Picture (cartoon, rainbow, N blue to C red):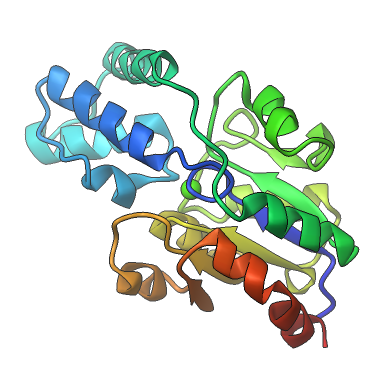
Length: 226
Ligand code: CA
């Protein structure tokens, strides 16, 4: 393996935003009459909004939601999210990015997020780290995680082979997407799920925080880069 790039997921990896997302999904789904727990949001993390809504609709009503319903529910969820205080950067993430760049490795962003203020937020908290040409966002993808598409696009944007990159992910569906793209996957368990959920999804290494990744970066780099 010749390590050239690290593909970073965003929510739950670079920003401590999953608690907010989980709460907003819970409030939005229950507002529209669906049974949904805040914990369940973590199992759907990474899926497109429409994908999540349809799975819950199928479970409860045995049919997909209509396009109008999807739009209304997702808008309600997004409005709740945007009305809350901005999520903090994940502790340890800045140090990880600094170490990655100091090793001569390129950081690439791969997120299912569609937030308009994405680039501004990244530049505010991680200035100069991510460039638009090396970002995959919700507007780029058709399928979304757990499909390998977002990570394959990330490799494509960086002109990389799977053996030239690793992925940093916090969500089981994200780990599935990454391993389906044949990329070595570091899972950081920053949420409430059991470690086994991430390991069973196919994670090659499991860490408990971004700080742990920062602390172990040199070892990991030596291990992977040789
Ligand atoms: Ca995530």
